[in-house]
Length: 298
Image (cartoon, rainbow, N blue to C red):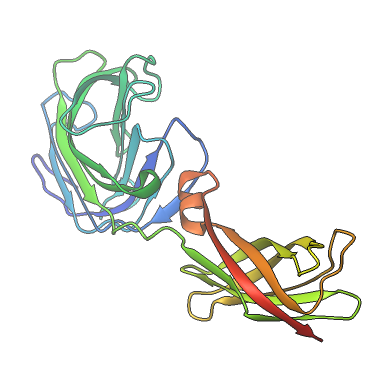
């Protein structure tokens, strides 16, 4: 049992961030650190007049794209009943910003013009709520990745004078680099007497992905009779080994490919697996290249 002004240590199991701009996305990322401290006035229903201090690295949090809602889910050491859920949301269309104090009503039922706040825990919450919170600091990385968050808050249930006050802060691991790609064609290809060309190349990637390769081959010999064709293929790529691609094509014009130089314009595209899951939207990486390939009789 937690006594008056009792202090407990907990593991912050989930720190979750969601955004009203997009309901999708649920990538779970371990947080690096997390703390929650609270003091409750006598007569405050949620805090029961006690003080709380939770600390120790967080084990996970999830972030969704948008930028104006931060949710913190904490599990304490005293078993399933020792938990806290906190939510901080800016007014509709307003991203939370450092140094700003928000007057709040109960999340998620607040009017669009009001900020939302909720501190619920150990089976106790407010039916109606007034209060405020101040964003001490908040920092974002690529694609809205929440790197750190620190907020103080004050909550009053049912219009009571008694309050629950506290501060929650956490930091996440450094955001992973966005997916990066590279693509090129080999310097030599083959062409048959019927004009069928075989081209090969490589792709590089910083995360394991399936890469789509598109391109165009154009050959204008001395006769000025241009042969050209477009192609699409795919390659499974890993950071250590890269990937290879190969296509066989014929000219889409009346003129056939022949031995000699052919110009290749190649593009690579792949979905970033981390940030697409994180934001709930499709984040793609692209790369392009141009090559002169020597066609030999195959």
